[in-house]
Image (cartoon, rainbow, N blue to C red; front, top):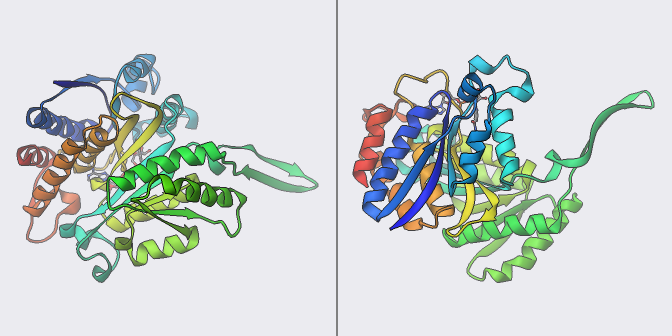
Length: 364
Ligand code: NAD
């Protein structure tokens, strides 16, 4: 029987509530697929600040290092908002985790379920039947990290400088992630750049074009980022996987999350430098935050956390069939009419966090 060590970092707000349902669904996967999960819980974020005095205690890092993957909830909330910025839960927990594990590839599926198109702010004629676009974003390079980076007085004026830098090797490694992801989906990859203006983008496009022959089953298209922002909203169904550098990916993945209309449904994966026996080490978490407005009420939507567990099976644990089962169970439960408050509409049945988790585990 295959056995996996999972570090479970539930965090704050709705984190523990939705995590409990993801673990319930993983327990159903264990039975169904003959897998074994060893869950080790660890504190992170605000709760860790309260108990241990820091957002990412050494013990939590040790548990993560010993694991095959990290299943993460979310961190932060009003209680810790008055702390200095560098001590705040997101900055002091998530950024060091990204850095420690070299989490360079951010995967955010933007899925609009056929039965939830009413939640999208985009016209029904555009989203009818739903869509499923995977946004792959480079997470550790580009403008956010390039040096020099400063703001200073020069000749009586204030000058701010950010530097966009990419090495070919950095583009290659994220490109392989995107091509492989496309192979497991509808085999179409759209690479986003601004090659008409930026040297970085010229290298980006050239590198993607060079790698493409290694993936003959995947068709590669290139799109300028300004055009991509328009096409994604005009025809999201025309895309399968999109790949972008850090800044472009940050913006476009948020645009895509917005047009699905359902934040509580969106999972994400951040994949690291180290490959494991089963896949690639990574951190798997919902796209949303700790939702302080509904925390503790048992009404949060656990689906983003459950689908994040599915992404963990697919990308870190090498169990795509088990991930497919989770995706299918979620679809079946949505089709059956069960809804948490955030996705509820007239004629559907409103349920709480736990009932939704139980229904998905049952559907497995
Ligand atoms: P948020 O995503 O927590 O909430 C935005 C809105 O979406 C709220 O109305 C919330 O109720 C709703 N929502 C989010 N997830 C939901 C779910 N699963 N089910 C139902 N409704 C859901 O964003 P925010 O309000 O900007 O941030 C709240 C806190 O979360 C802040 O402290 C922020 O720093 C933190 N945050 C953490 C992460 C992370 O840990 N990765 C990410 C984003 C925000």
